Length: 175
Image 1: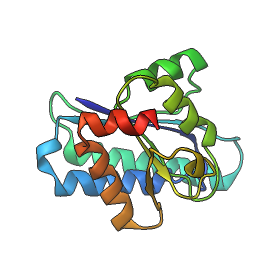
Image 2 (image 1 turned 90 degrees about the vertical axis):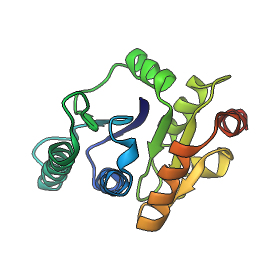
Image 3 (image 1 turned 60 degrees about the horizontal axis):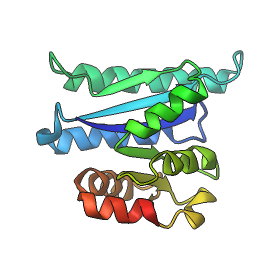
Image 4 (image 1 turned 120 degrees about the horizontal axis):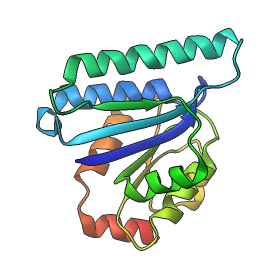
């Protein structure tokens, strides 16, 4: 199975809902990947007591529930959601195992996550799918850039990442 990892926090600016909706569209269009791709969304809860973050958390959980309810098989759950803070060492381990890292903030943010993924993949294949709104998108030339506001661009970027051959993955990670 291919592991797609996305790490952020519960915040309406981080593009978590847009990412999940793109993944849902992917599963609707491409039945051949059912059972072959898992999205791990490590989405740490934001400050409690703020309605906007509570609403965002609820929306993320509802979308994950809908996707898993619609597409799960007896031996496959398409989306894994973790809202607990993942210790740094464990996060690095996730980065080393993820075939794809999908980072889609709606404005600048999550630059360190993108850079940590690339550092953890040194000498390995992998694909970084990155919002063009991050500052890191200027530095990380090998990333597959996307626009989280565009369904077409989000869909094309994750499909490109999943289908990318190993030689291109190595080349992009090296750059």
